Image 1 (tube, helix red, strand yellow):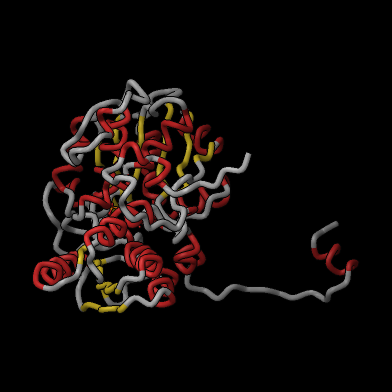
Image 2: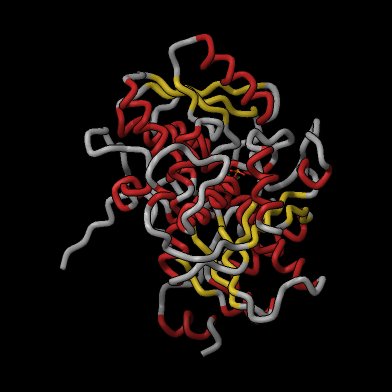
Length: 366
Ligand SMILES: *Cc1c(COP(=O)(O)O)cnc(C)c1O
């Protein structure tokens, strides 16, 4: 029987704050693969799956939050949206603004956006404000714009973003038939860890501080447990590890190059109430995990995405992974967005051979 995945707002309508009368702006986001990763499982002595969020329409999990935030903007009758971004939020906002016929303004740290992400904002016709500052400066600026002018803010400080993003936790439980023992993910502005924690709890029949007053937690529980939450930051951008905001965050993982996370309290609650942790991994560990995902699992992710896997590997080396545990890792964005960081600085070397069978076979060692 034909079944078209209809996007998260429709697939999980009974657990989201929209009614049948509300407009839905969707590009078919969600329904992403949960891929068994035998190479990782072997390495950490547990059962590891990766949730491949790079398979969303614009190549990152931001689409889950954007279908929700932009649908709410349309319902409210607003005509323009604004966001600060390290790249993926702007790519997603720009695409959903096209679908909703809205004006889209994005503030980006100048010179710090991966080429693929910048291309997305441009092709979708967003108005770019390149800011002489970092992400935290951009967020402060757009909050000011949204306060003073008729533009709606679609960063994750907009509660509708987290509403959409919580559906990834629903999908994981639906795919496994239970909640994982541990869920690992990268932490930047900390909206996503807050959203997953809300999603896992609502599926277990409980609300969190991020929950809105709606039906989700009143629905029958879909699971009787919630996972331990493991968040991972980059060493040079690890405010939760330091216990306070960081002035000049630095990391190759640009999507988590954030020093003053907006969802601070929700993320701390997710960590503490799950008995979890938020720790740091180095850029080298991130790049190793990215390479391992590409060469041994078959999933190409951008550097920030690999922080979850780098963290689980690090915990395993420290003897902190319970044997046989069921672990899910969110890999947040597609590697194609930032191919340069995966390939390194050098040009790609190729040595062409003539297009004949004998030479090609010889070149391959047959
Ligand atoms: C936005 C983003 C993150 C960080 O998510 P937060 O909700 O800001 O913690 C991580 N990885 C990728 C690829 C992202 O786009």
